[in-house]
Length: 63
Image (spheres, rainbow, N blue to C red):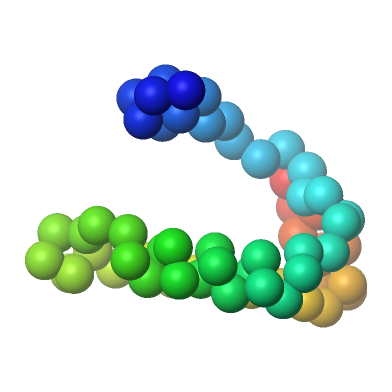
């Protein structure tokens, strides 16, 4: 899959998977976001790592 194909393949999340990621997977995702390109590092975004099951359930209800 090329980069453009991968970018065009994305879709909106309709429900969150209840599967727990390994800590190493979470750390890799955090590092990938940290290294992702932004306009001079000025694009404001936040990465939220939700560990609480109660919060996940509330988020699922709002979708």
